[in-house]
Structure formats: structure tokens, C-alpha cells
Image (cartoon, rainbow, N blue to C red; front, side, top):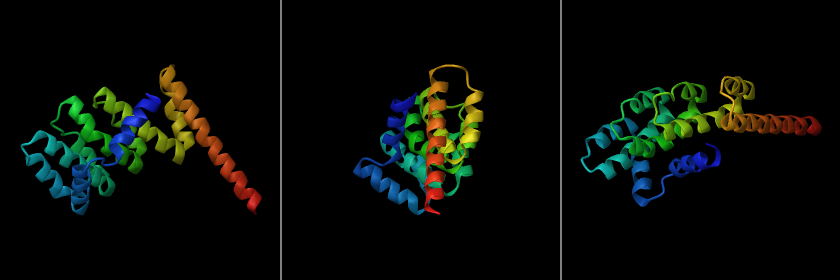
Length: 168
């Protein structure tokens, strides 16, 4: 789940096409009506681009509403990954612990993106909470990778604290 999932998440985290960029700027103006408009579009490709942008924008300003909208997506699993990718990254920034508990109903790939993004945020903000999450995971490669991430974040925080101590 590590680098490959992180790469997929990064691909969805930033609009890559002119249409995606324009849609994101439009959605950022007022995400709530943008979602309504997006869901009314008949062209599936355009609907997915608009819906993705609108949900990302909504996740930045109203994570609770974005969580509710994510639960009502009408796309297939592969399309859902496209819509969810950037939204999940934004939701991870807003509330990583909530996202970690809300991943059960997501398609496998989307769940992995959500877990990876949320866990990275949690490990940066609260390594002890991230470690508690890791302890509940089954033994395996994913748990080992998450443990290594927590250890790196703890080391980074320790190094930063030592730098601050030296500066005084």
C-alpha cells in the first residue's frame, strides 16, 4: 500500500488538466452549489471532474459535509477512486482520525489511499495516536510500513526539538 498508493493519492491531489484546473477554481468559489451542478451533468467524464473538484473544495471548508457527500456517491468503484482521491487527501488533512474510522465502506483502493493519507497526517500531528492505531492492525507488511512511518515522524520531531534546544 505504501509508495504506489501514495503516488495515486498525489496524482489526484492536484488538478492535472486544463479542465480539472478550471473546475477546481470554479468549485472553490462555492462548493455546495458546485456539487449540485456536478451531479446534474449528464456527461459522465465532465460530471466526475466537476464532482471531484467540488468535493475537494468542500472538504477544505466543511469536512463534515464532505464526509456526508462521499457516502452518497453514485459512481462505480473505479470512478469513485477518481472522485475520492483528492477528497480523501483533503479530509485526511482536516481530520485524520475520523477518516481512519470512516474507511470501512470504501472500495479497496480508495480505502488504502484514505488510510495512507490519514495515517501520514496523524503520524505527523500525533505520533502516539498513530502508534495506537498501528497496534490494532494485524501483523503484516502494512503494519510494518506504518510502524516505520511513525518511527520516522517521531525521529523528525525529536531532531526538531533538539535543534530548538541548541538554539536557546
